Length: 280
Length: 319
Image 1 (cartoon, chains in turn purple, cyan):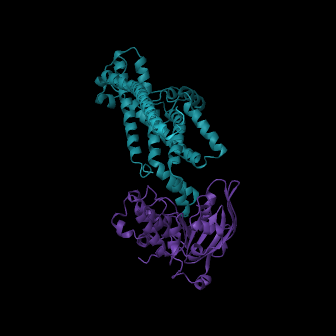
Image 2: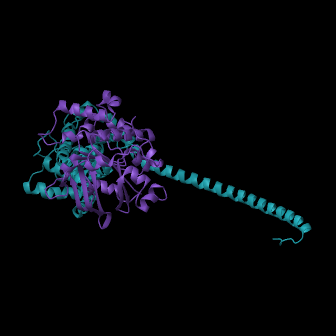
Image 3: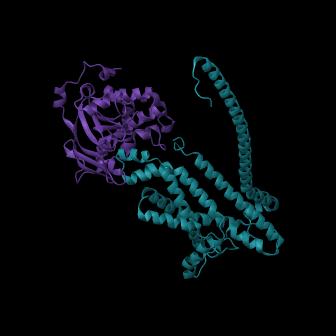
């Protein structure tokens, strides 16, 4: 597997760093500008600004309760689904503010997919119907035919390396799959509609090491087609799979830098303390 | 305790005797502890056994009425339950034999009308309560439906009579079905709400994140996931209203002839049982026992069906 090793974490001389030039020239797909997120009166994300380049994997790390999941949920307007939650500031997706007056949250979520901490297959649906769940609800003129749906389902399952495991039982209930398979099914479901950005909210937190590794390999392979932002508790994971890492603390974005820089020569002493394991 | 010894000679002696003293003290402490522990332990065991016995007794008493009812009904009613009972009309007074075909079909009609009217309202009201749990209106509706749930059925019957029978000067199956629906709605509403609440928030979020609209998430993901539980609740509500008598006396009224018309008075098993049981004829009493047995059988079958519906609750059980 072409998976990068833990070399980034402990080895000081970084050999395969993504060159800064290509990063600078990559078009930005998401730009977060002075974002604040609230639960009622509590301000859980404070004045966060950063940009995400197309085709890159961005990791968001930080201790529990630092607002990293909330920040992620602001990026596809899932934050506002919680009663009492609200957002201020701008999130520009391909140049357009997703919180703009004429923008529908539904449309935003169709282009910015999301996978959650725990696998969430729809228990009433078969494996096939789970993967095609996002296709069935597309507007009539965009909705694929039955044949096209079959192709898209197969493609999504192949991209998540599930096809060989489930191709002979697409009609069976999705809850019969193992936890790791269910999570890959959720990634396949999110990929089936070909989103531009995929948000992963601690996707391996409830999985065993083998399943975790498969998800990480998946992220590595998908980076060419889809821009990925992953929230993780696991610093080694961030170091292994991401191009850039954002470190959050108490709702603030402390540092945002290329992953190897953030883990080896962080500028902020708080980042240094966190990545070297002095707290968190 | 002994003080510190001064001098090298005394120290050994003192240390030895100290150790011996301590050992003795420790032994007696240990023995005492063992004794008292044994005492507390045996007392605890006794109390534990007693409480288990008491709860078992209470559980036994709880199922006793049903067991007695079933045995009694079987003894009294079984001899009168035959094919005629299901297929024949009641015979005129004095004639022996006949059956309750009209009442059985009448109960079926009434339950059908009540279900058609009550189930959609109850399920959608439950969906509303579950999805808008914080809203003030939801709190009010929830409270009122709990009150309606506890309302004596005779009160409901009189109310239905005033609203649905008196203005039309006519008893009807429709009025009876509506009275039963009014009983059914709060039951179904609350069980639906509980079942929908059992659907994890993560399921809802997964659908929203895929670009599902709110109403679509509610209907095709949340409601569908909760469906087996809702079916169970609906079946239990049906079983409950199938045996109701009081709301029907004022509305469906009963009918000794064959009728399936919703606008005419209609017979129902519980009412027929009541009329026959209070009549002075032995033959009618036997018929009433048979009717009670059939009604019980019906309710049992529905309850067992509800159990099976619960068992097939896909996926929700494991989390």
